Image (cartoon, rainbow, N blue to C red; front, side, top):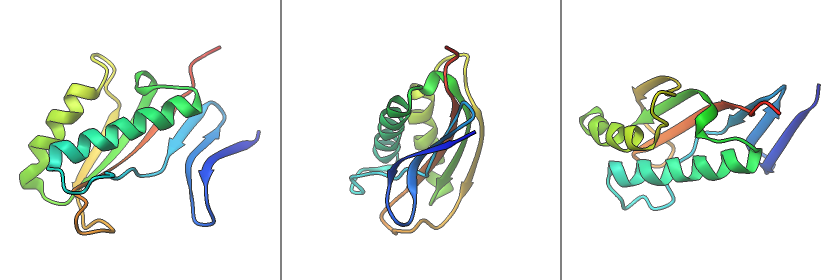
Length: 118
């Protein structure tokens, strides 16, 4: 069984694919001036792009880990999440408050998805 890496540099890969499973690195917003909902929407759009690049989609999500910097804004993140997730197919999910690598980032999300069956 081989592992395939995509969008890699010396530190990390954005995507790793192994045995029919796609693992994404934690994704952060590109425009940190947006509010929590806006940053979450950016992150989810990037996740869509990366999943498509790997040959799958949010329809095949297995799990998600969500980090937010302020639980007072958790509802805004959930609004964006619930508008994005496929109805009837929510992944298992953990969400917690954490200090992120850049203080202007409000959210980071990491997901795992299955490749569709051929």
